[in-house]
Amino acid sequence: MSSQEKLEPFVLDVAGLTVEIAGREGRVVRPARDLTFRVGRGRVVGVIGESGCGKSMTALSVMRLLPASAKVTGGTVLFNGEDLLTKSPRAMRAIRGKSIGMVLQDPSVSLDPLFTIGDQIDEALCMHGRMPAARRRARAIELLEAVGIPAPQDRLTQYPHELSGGMLQRVVAAIAIAWNPALLIADEPTTALDPTIQVQVLDLLGHLRDTLGVSIMIITHDFGVAAHICDDIMVMYAGEVVETGPVRQIFDNPGHPYTRALMESSTVPKGKGRLPTIEGQPPDLGDLPPGCAFAPRCPLANEQCHHAAPPRIQLSDIHQATCWYAGEGMT
Amino acid sequence: MTNYILKRLGLAVITVLGVLLLIFVATRMSGDVALLMLPQDASDEQIAAYRARHGLDRAIPVQFLNFMRGMLTLDFGESLRYQRPALEVILQRLPATVELALMAFVLALVVGVSLGLVAAYYRGGWADRSIRTSAVLLQSMPNFWIAIMAILLFAVMLRWLPTSGRDGAASYIMPAMTLMLFPLAAIMRMTRSAILETIESEYVKFLRIKGVSEGRILWRHALRNALIPVIALSGLQLGNLMGGTVITETIFNWPGLGSLMIESFISRDYPVIQVGVLLIATFLILLNLAVDLLFCVVDPRIRYA
Image (tube, rainbow over all chains, first blue to last red; front, side, top):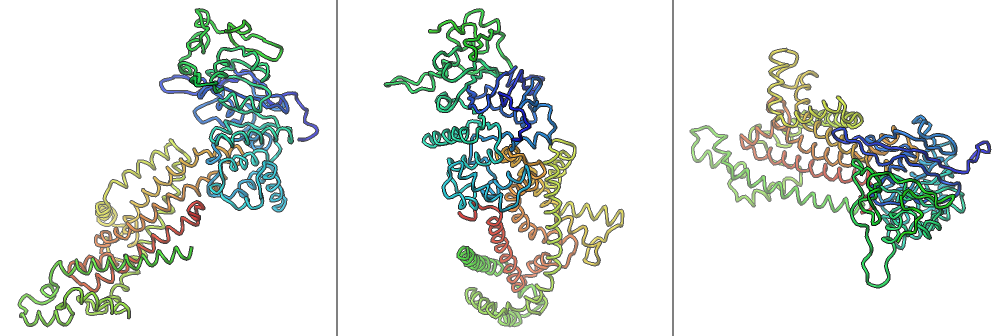
C-alpha cells in the first residue's frame, strides 16, 4: 500500500446498494435492496443469513463479478474511499486479486485442474506487476508457508487433485493474499469442508488478519462460524440488512427476531431436544410482502408488521436493528 | 507408463487377431470365390483346381494357420482379382485414402474448434445461432446424399468441379468436403458446449477474482479444459471417417482403400479383404491408444490414475 493512500477508517463503505435481476415476463428480482454496511479496517465482518438472502450477490457486486443477468441499479461501494461501481473494467481488474482477494466456497473446484499449484500461484503473481521468475517462486513458497502448508516447495509441482480440501482452501487463500490485499472476501469458506478442518481454516483467516492486517468480510449461514472469528456481524434477510453491530452486543442482545431465530438454530441444544428451526421459508425476492419481509415467519408479528416497513432502531451507537420491536425486550 | 503402453499393445495384438479370425471365417461363408472367378461353363475339375491352387480346399482352421504363417514373412497371399500380392494392391490404393481422410480430418478439427469457439464467445448472438443451426443441418443430412447433391450442383449444373476421379487439386474438394462435414459439425458442437461449461465453472470465476483477463482465461484455461472432451470426440470421428471413406470413395470413384474394399468384398477377393481389415483394425486400435495417451498429456488427473 502506498504511503500517499489516505487511510479511511473503513476499508469498505457500502451505501444504498441495490442489485436487480431481470426475470421472465418483466419480473424483477432484487437480491440486494438498499444495503448499507461498512467493513472497518483490520476487522472481521460476518455476513449472516439463510441461502438465497443475497449474501453472495452482495460480495459479487463488490467484486463487480455479478452474473450477466444481474446488475447494480443503485448505491455506492466505496473501497478505500473510491467508488468501485464507477471503475472501468480494466481498472477493476487491476483491483481484483491485488487490493481485494476472495476465497470461494468449494476449494475442490476453485482451481484449474490442469495446472499445478505453482503455476496458479505464479499466474496471480504475474497479473499485477513484473517480478523475475526466481522471486516469484520464492514468493509462492513464502505464501504457502504463510497459510500453513507443510513442505511448500513440494506443493508447487502438485496438481489440485493431489491435495485435500483443507489444503486446497489454504492454497486458494494463499492466492487471495498474494498481493497483500486490504480486503479479503470469504464466501462460505468452510461450508464444503469437514468439521475438523473448518475450524482450522477459520483460525487461518484470523491469523491472516492478525499478521497482514487485512480486513475480512466472511459470508456464512452459521452463527458458530461468526462467533468464532468475527468482530462485527451483519444479518441479512431477503436482500436487506436487518441487524448490524459488534458480535458481542448482538449475541448478548439480539435486536431482530430473525437474528435470535438464527442463533437458536445454530447452537446444538443440550439433551435430546430437536434442533430448533425457523418455520417457513425466505420470501420470493420477486414478490415481497408490503411490510416487514420477515413478518410471515415472525413469532412477534402483528398487523403493523404486515403492512408497514419497520424502522431502523439504534440499540447502541454501533448496534442497530430494523424491526418494530427492536429494543423492546423480546420473549 | 511404459508398462501401460506395452499392456495396451499386447491387448491390441489379441484384438487384431480376433478381428482377422472373424473376417476370415465370415468371408469364406459368404459364397464361393471359384464360382465367381471362373467362367460360367467351367468344369468341376477346373473349379477344384482353382480351389486347390489358392488353398481354398483345405479346412478353414488350416487356411487360417497358413495365412498366419504367411503373415510372419509379410506374405499375405495373392489377390484373386489382380493376380498380384494383396499387400501391394492395398499399398497402392492406400495413399489416396490417407490424403483424403487426413485432409478432411484436419479441416474438420481446425474449422470445428474455431467455429465452436466463436459460437461460445458470441453465445446467443447471430453467429452462434447460425453456427448451431448449420451444425444440426449438417448432422442430419446423410453424407451420400450431400455428395450426390454436390455433384449435381457443382459438377453437373455449374461445371466448376469434376464429377469424380482423382486428378488435380479440384478433384479433392468435393470428396474431402463430403467427408469432413459430419465430423466438423460434431466437433463444433462439442467445442461450443465444452467451452461454455468451463466458462461457467468455479475455477474460471476464481481466475476472474485473481484479476486474470478474459482473453487469457479463454485461451489458456477454458480452451485447454474444453479440449479434453473434444479430443475424445475427435478420436471417434477419425475412426468413423475411415468408415465414411468407403461410401464417399465409391460415389466419387476415388481410387482409395475404401472403394477397393467394396470391390474386394463384391468379388470375394479374400487376401485383399484380409490385409485391408488387418490394416484398418490396427489403425483404429492405435488411434484409440494415441487418444488415451493424449489424454494423459492434457489431463494430470488421468496421468496419475
